[in-house]
Amino acid sequence: MSHASSPFSKQQLLPQEETLEVTKQKGELFIGIPKENQYQEKRVCLTPDAVNAITANGHRVLLESGAGEGANFSDIDYTNAGAEITRDTKKVFSCPIILKVEPPTLSEIEMLNPQTIVISALQIKTQNKEYFEKMAKSRLTAIAFEYIRDDDGNYPAVRSLSEIAGTSSILIASELISNPNTGNGLMFGNISGVPPIEVVIIGAGTVGEFAARSAIGLGANIKVFDNSISKLRALQANLKQTVYTSTVQPKNLLKSLKRCDVAIGATRGKDRSPVVVSRSMVENMKKGAVIIDVSIDMGGCFETSEVTTHRKSTFEKYGVIHYGVPNIPSRYPRTSSISISNIFTPYLLKIGEEGGLEHSLRFDKGLRNGLYMYHGILTNKSVGDWFGLSYNDINFLIF
Image (cartoon, rainbow, N blue to C red):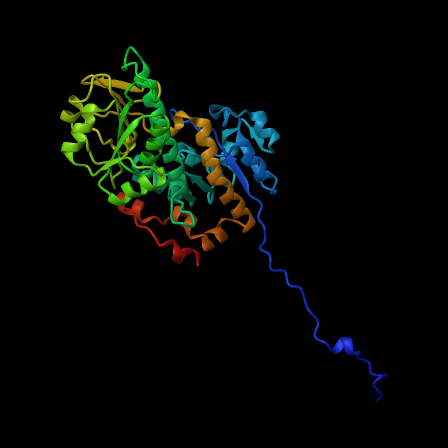
C-alpha cells in the first residue's frame, strides 16, 4: 500500500491535545441579614457597597427592612446595591446563610431551618449550655467571626474592633474631661504654655496601641503599663517614637495614676481581666479624672468599675468619673459596620467562588478555626470545655 493511499494522514497519527475543565464549580449564595434586636446594637454586618460586590458576583442578599438604619444605611441604599428587602423576619431567617453581628438568640434559632449556616459573633461568656444544645438539635453549621484567623495567624475581626475601641476610648475621655460640670474642663491638645493632659494606659495590646496613638495625636503625654516586655517593645516600634513604658509595678502605677487626668484600662485575661488598679489607687486619683475601662466586657481591670450603658454611660466614685460601657465599638455603628463588612465580604466571595462553605473549610485553615458547630456537631474545644459538652475534631469530619 502506498503512502498516498493510506487511510490515516500524518496529522491524524499525532497525539491530539484535549482541554480539560479544571475550574471549580462556582456556587450561588443566598444570604439573609436580619435586623439586630439586641439592646444598644446598631451595627449591620454588610454595607450597601459590600452587598453590591456580592450581588455583582451572582449571589442573592435578602435584608430585613431597617437592618441598616442604626448605622445610617437606608433600605433604598441596599435596594440600589442589589439586595432584596422584606419586612418578614421569618423569611430572612429561612435563608441558607444567615449573617449577624450578635449571636442569634434562642427564639431566633427556632426560626432557622435545619442545616442553616450562621456566621456571627459567639460571645462565649454570654452563652449557656442550652444554647449549644438547641443549635445541635437544628443541625446548624455556625462560624464565630471573632475566632477566624487570617494567613498571618491574627484575628482580623478582633483586631479591627480593638482598633476602634482604643481610638474611641480617647475620644470619649476627651468629651468627659472637657465637661466643666462633671469633668475638669480640660482640653486635649498641645496648647502652648499649657501643661498637656496626662494619660495612663494599662495594657499594650491593640486597644492600648490605638489609645496611645490617638492620645499622642491629640497632644497628650502618655504612660503605658504592661507585664509583657515584647508587647511594650512592639507598641514602641508601631508608634515610631519613644514613650514612657513600664511593667505593672504597683508603686510606679500608683504614682502615675495620682498625676494622670485619664486612665484607660485595656487588659485581657483568659477567663476575665485581671484587676490591676485597686480601690485605694482610685481613691488617690485627682478629683474629676476619668477612667475608661475598655476591659469591662471581661470584668474590668479597675476594682471600682461597674457596667454602664450608652444611655447612662458614667458614674462617679471617689470623685473620679467611671465609664464602663461594654462593646464600645457599637457607639460608632457606621464605622464599626464598615469594619465588620470589610472582614465578611472577602470570605463570602471566596466561599461562593469555591462552590460553598464545605470546600472553603477544607482548604482555609483560618476559616476552619472560626467554626464551632458543624451540622449540629460541636467542633470547638473551648466551648466543649467551658460548658462540659462533648466535641469532635473538625479535621476528622470534613476530610
